[in-house]
Length: 377
Ligand code: SAH
Image 1 (cartoon, rainbow, N blue to C red):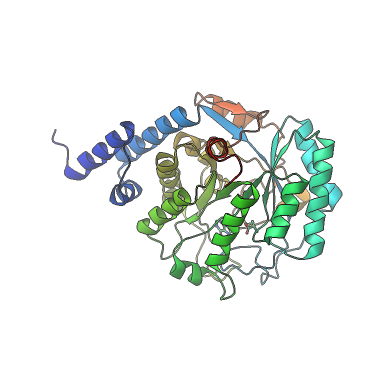
Image 2: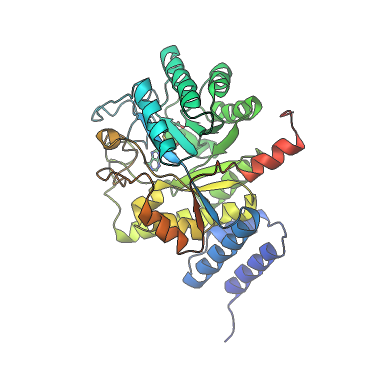
């Protein structure tokens, strides 16, 4: 049977990846625009080969601690934006944050992520700094801590780094300036976010960023530009996931919850982005985001098969889970995740992958970059 032109082109692009050749912007875009089932499977399989080769058949676990939903930002898509008065505020005490981290450590975790809404006031800075110092002390400095606490000054990033944080996640959300403007109030700045990523790198963090996928008015071309941005900025870790509307936000209030078909489409787009990110960025850590799981019960496993190598089980105390609704239908809000999730272990092992809890799982990209420039020049 004759192969049609697009199919041949996709096959050729995949062949190029297998031959270790660089892809052009147009070729990356063609991969993101695949809709045909067989081609999708070929894309995921190709990205998986790149993953196995550059970061191994291993999935690292990070325990996610949602420390507070209080946020000074007002992003139009986010359920915990400051203007959403329907959110019940919570703010873990320093001791509660430390307890979460130590509990994770006692259950074998060697890596946690502390995430919260953004606050730039001195009290918050000190609150986190103190928690970090105690975590370091109570885990004999054997627990890698990632922070995801938004835009901060260089001084704050430096203080938290000195107190024991090693990694920082700050999603750029989108690198298209017009789209960024549509999604945020006028006092939110794309340039500030870019500057923060540079500062984080300068301070010495392993730096992660990411975007939301499938935003209104976002094109495949935008997403390719986002991935090239990550490449140009030497990003070590990628955390990105499908956009899911939240009914209490300006962007989501007129959108009905996704039906099954929309969920499937959003999931596929998320998986394609993981695959193309893996193909382009090769040795970075890529998370199979929780929002993939919100779209399908096996979303995270599919993420791993498309090239992801990190999963972040939510360890936040159930009392707070429901109040950290970034988007609708966020999973696990009524379910206490077993600290070492046996089901996850089984499903990941079934893919021929090792689920690794006891390893820091530092980004290979970071290791290579520090080796080549030991003083972060
Ligand atoms: N305040 C921190 C982290 C908390 S928000 C920061 O600014 O980095 C974490 C992430 O949730 C955001 O970066 C955003 O990409 C994602 N998010 C927010 N609303 C979302 C939505 N409706 N759908 C999907 N992801 C969303």
